Image (cartoon, rainbow, N blue to C red; front, side, top):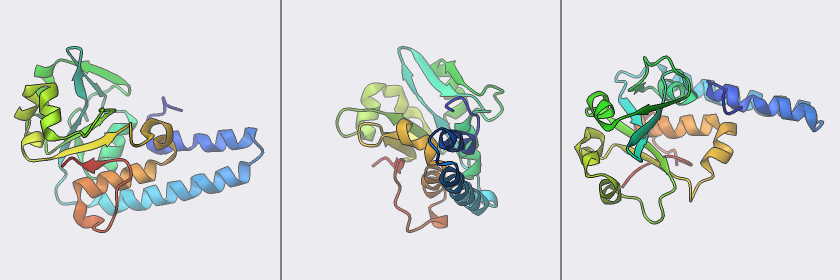
Length: 191
């Protein structure tokens, strides 16, 4: 399922598992509810006037790891009313870039999505301590980092079955006026 290129494609694996454990009806109902909620949220963000630009990843061992423009993450950003900085990249999997390439394409991006397992309180100071060049991104300067700490949330374990929750988190981050009372589960704006 992790190779699926759409968020709903990942969640649809519940139907496959349901067949094996004798809960096909329940699995189909669960997926139908996920799909409806996801599509309702997607429609909510479909007509936003401004589509912010978002980039993703961090530098590790001299390489910046992101995903291509045909990935489930790129689709989540698109469905949340944002444009992914690699939206025209034809790959669906991981993309290894150098810092300069990311900087040239994402320096003026509105948002920066980060998922890591930082030990302690992750903050803008902590992010800058990892690489001082991070402070040169507009998303850093304007406090546009959207963050998930995997030490606090089982992101990769449960996110594939909750694409509607992830989408809701992202819509709330990119367009808070659309979901003013929403409390994020995975992603929140870094303070």
